[in-house]
Image (cartoon, rainbow, N blue to C red; front, side, top):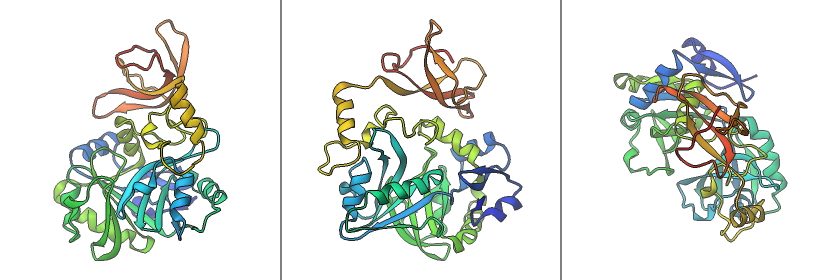
Length: 343
């Protein structure tokens, strides 16, 4: 298995290490509930260096990004990012990703670790443009500082105006004496904060500096377990669970990142136009349970007559609500707030 530049740090913190997307990653340091609540109330630091980073540059860089992504990257200004997906040619999703516009003709695509190789080949197969695709995943480390106190903590380490960075915007500056850090107002928790892109060689220094700066604000290292409960409370999709090669972004509630009216052609554009015209038959919904049993991926969903109508894609015990929650696909006529279903 691969290791991030912070592997030894996690081991020294007595993290429970697990295999995730081909990496040895920390799933929990103390308890998932404690880490989850700390992000909601204070701040937490995540090592997400397993994520993949691709660079697309050249005179027709935008053309390639537009061809492979569902959102409209032409709307991006320099120092702005957008959530998007890579559609396949059958109406499904190769991956979801964030697209950063670094320069007029240079974009960074941040993809899921488990899909990085697949994504690279998919994008490269579409590259009939005057554009260069580079996989720089092995050179970048990525730290996510999340929570309501994240800005106060990080501001101690940088002269960049963090309050001036709007959601899904970024800047490049020095942090903790490290130059050229991409400081991005993005995250996967719903509690605000920043994602910091740095070279592998600077990962340990930045981790230690942030943890030291956050002591007074009760910062904790956070593992993948709490990352999952945090994102699920927000209804954020996880690739491999809630979306995959056989799910449409429109079915998954991601129609807002499918810009069928953009001038550029892109994979499955006609399929999505047809779905919007004719409608879809199923929809991803969120649900809560009225007992303490936790729903798991693959559990059947039934209607009140106990006929199976769908399946659970993600489920957990919500630390914030103190009740089990989940997401799953059901027929559109069932996907109405207040409806009862059975798990």
